[in-house]
Image (cartoon, rainbow, N blue to C red; front, side):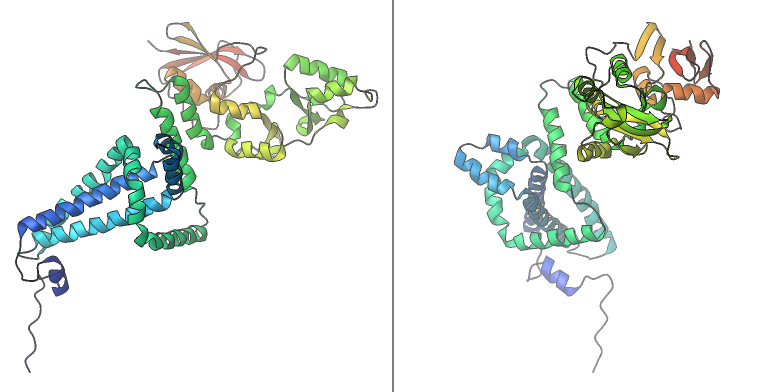
Length: 442
């Protein structure tokens, strides 16, 4: 009995040779090239189909379908668009693996060594990236809807054999997400992103209208803004002491032009409720006007921390059916207040009614010299004037930046230089800065 010679380390396993080479051991370059090209083309097709499914919007596709019967059939398929995208992904991965295997077999037909394998990988990687990822994404953006209208019904039938794999993968994915306590909102996110793309695609000019562009930017930034950035600070709150007569409260409403105000006891740090102008008016002219006091009209205050995100605050407003929230700091004191209008303005921009003044937040006094309201947020000042005031510090507004730089409450006329920009206090009270003049050094 003689032991068999060891297999050379530079030769592939026999099973791989059998799978990649013809049974008679011959090597046909033309046939191999055609099989490789076919696998790559199929991978590109399924990649395009998957990208088109991922960016599809049912309303947009149904509008292009001809006839009610065709729309009904197509609508049932669009309800399963996420599963169909997974099926397309499975076919794409299968074609990718087939392409790589055929390419490796073709290049290593003469010798299976490191150099030939490295050459195969060097050809396969950029080919897959360009022809099955980058190019399909661009094609799907340009012609994805037309592709789906022509091929989706046929593809639905073609993918039925792997439908059970898709169901199993979705169940496994859901179990993993639940185990990691991750919320699955991929479908909602896709619809949101494609909705924003629709806005961009619907603009006739090459650029978005300024109002549409601002709205999209505000929506994308909405979740990252906290209440402290949009609140009315404590020093600007117009409130009433709980023992104030209803007549005086009515006068206060007329002076401040608000529909509701907070009510405090002893100090603004102890806000015990809110009252609306409507409730005060009804109490003054109702049958029980002589027996009602301000305390009888109060609604419990909605107290929230200053770190709450305004997206969460919007849900809180809905849940408690309130339109005003009192912002409290870490010590339990009143930091400010936020209304539903403040939250909406963060989305759609500043809203002014006919009773509000029209004072500009940023006014150009002369070329290169601007007068800015001190309550304007630092990010807005930077955007309006092209400045680089730090935005990650303890202050939120231009007035806070001035106080941080000077280290004290300044008087009108005081100034300082920072990054070749001169900041001058144009107007100030004994408690805060009101207006700041900003001028770049020549």
